Image (tube, rainbow, N blue to C red; front, side, top):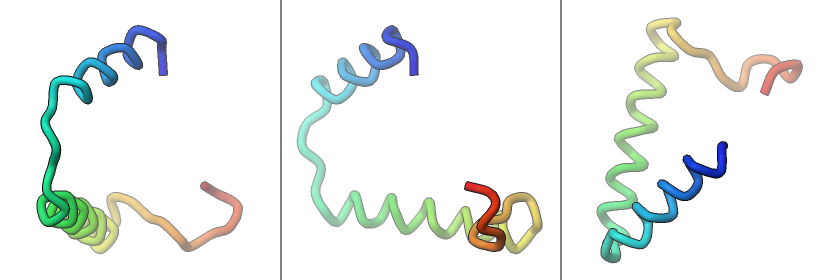
Length: 53
């Protein structure tokens, strides 16, 4: 990540207020659901071959 992009991320973090754990968990679940759907559609793959990260 470039220094400029890192500064932007830091600025966003500072500007946000605290987030409830339930909101974090809901967002994580949504990301996992999308990843599973994309894997089922063959768009992405993960955890199948130790040669790739």
